[in-house]
Amino acid sequence: MGKRNIITLAGDLASGKGTVSTLICDELGYEVYRNGNYFRELAKKMGMDVTSFNVYVKSHPEIDRQIEKSAAEYAQSHDNLVIDARLGWYAVPDSFKVYLRVDLDVAAMRALNDPNRKDSENFTTFEDQKADMKRRFELENERYFNIYGIHKEDLSNYDYVLDTTNLKPEEVKDKIIAEYKKWLEV
Image 1 (cartoon, helix red, strand yellow):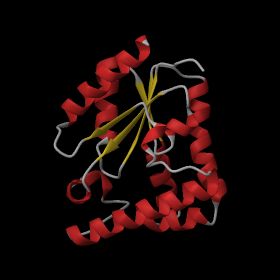
Image 2: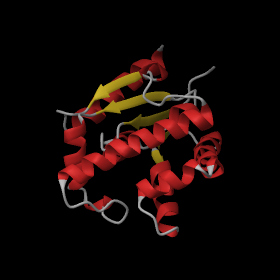
Image 3: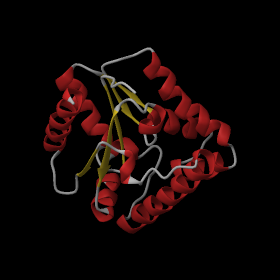
Image 4: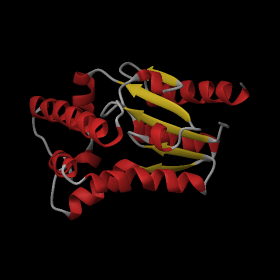
């Protein structure tokens, strides 16, 4: 299998995928494809928050398959791309596959204070945000295993794993780009 000029970013909820994907694109001149935005838009259209939609999709696997298929199809006709998607590594196996980890307490605080999440996950307390993130993690893992037979948190699926808990987005971007360049040279 060859290597493509595509970076797939997966990771824990609120690990910085969205922010970092934008920074990488800005530096490399790549474009970004975000499965999460597609998922959130579908949830909004159905009048659901993202957790309720996760539950709904569990019994409607065709929705999940279409979401993942959209990333694979987009990558077929595009290069110089960052794919921000939980299963981007699975959809585009010839990409540089990155997994971002983060401490759950830090992730919950990030999510709680992120104004971009308010229309699809509007929590007022840290405890509620954290509990919801745990639930979403479990729902996603169960759904991905049932539909695809995979575990997204199996770190052997990735070329590079980075904990973002104590890093600034610029530092994460720099580390990923450095590893990506090494990966391209091998």
